[in-house]
Image 1 (cartoon, rainbow, N blue to C red):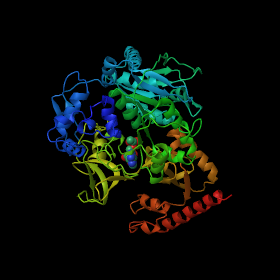
Image 2: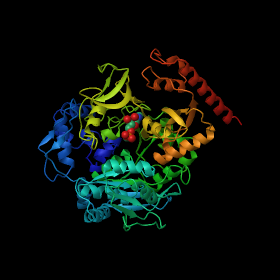
Image 3: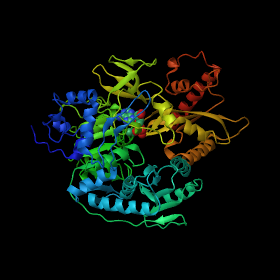
Image 4: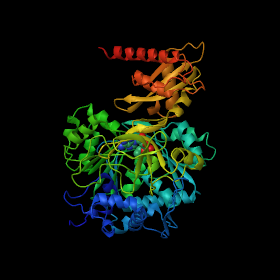
Length: 627
Ligand code: WTA
């Protein structure tokens, strides 16, 4: 057998993304160094079976070998999916920041932890584990001195940068929770999240820089905290040289130091404001002693070659991105990719939404030169980490384009029919649930455990419900088909349609609205809003659209703005007054034969009007496209 040279970093991340270090290795130790101790486990598939059938021993080994405990756990798990009770490693105590930093500083202090790919191309900055630990400790001390204590929740509203990572780890270090809010969110959306978290401390920067544009993050915080009486202090770091007005509440932070050392480079280009940034830019790579890239910019700044320029310059080995960006880039042509050296790449990952076959093929053929496996990884905020992905699997095991395919270690997916029965056959579709708990899964919703139970455990008693639909192929591979609830996924960002409707309905001209997702070339899903105006309102469509865009970007974020607004006299409703979104979706999908049972519809002519209105929009769009 090959000597097991897989670093602890490679063990977890690389296990998820399927890099096997050497082509022909792959005794079970290559997937998991602890595996040889499990009797009778000789292959990847036996290891997976074991991880599900004897999940306690499996996770106990992982927990013991890979984490440093302050006090060891006495019970591996105490979970009951029928009650929504999730408890892992009971009695155990650890500090995640110690696991991400101190452990590696002990063995290799000069290994690079972070490579900050700043918005300004070619000006990357590297931080070693020692430096990141120093920065984290300093920030932790500042927080502690300023009264932040165990159990508090600190809101972090920062771009993807080393100080934001240090802020996350500093919170964890002193026992505070962090609430990282995507820096693209508006003052209102930020304020709501600060209030939810009951934060008294916010950490931000003077300005953000993305795609060459400056955003006034500190000003947005100033505006947000007006309606957040709990906030007592705002820590402000300087990302640019532009001074900002400081108030009595604000505390200025200093900048820190950097240097460099060699290492394996993991490039997850997600923003830290989303779960992918948490698990695969910060905690996953650092807990495993890896070198991780913090990508601050956009895929097309200064030009559509940005990702591949970054891959060449930083010698990235694993590149993890979103289908929406891949779809966008493929439209610019191959030369933006091929002009850069991508020979360091070993694995290409995709996450956040279904990746269509065209994008998958392009990613594989052009970006990966046909030699890097493309792994379509399915997971969600609630699952904590990757649950279904083509790798790890036996070397040379097939990868089917556009499919997440195989359950990860310890994951037992099931499909449910509409009556809540488990579908046992293959070549079938249903609601995707998980039949067994695993340590990374969510345990509650802060301050709302009841909602947690209702959302995830009541729909299918005894199972965790993901909210997604999936198809299981004849070979038993999983393919995610999309959300089943009223949540849409725009450019990989989940948003409830109700949240958008809520804002649209606040417009003084609007009587009511219904928002649905529709298939969009680049964003995956776009936002389609049906709007009923109040009686006797006279407003030009362009004005309405401007008003709504302004309101939605102010209250939520730019990405949630409607792509299409269709005015209607009324919406199709059931006799009990519920909007029939299914009908709206079918109209927009042009599937008029699939409207289904309309017997509960209050007024059938409403559907005809909606169809006509939609046709008019299509005609307009076609006219616009003609030269
Ligand atoms: C969707 C992002 C298809 C899905 C990690 C899920 C996907 C939601 C995939 C979670 C994929 C994520 N194929 N759909 N590979 N990955 N999704 O919480 O609907 O931001 O429930 O976590 O994104 O989004 P979240």
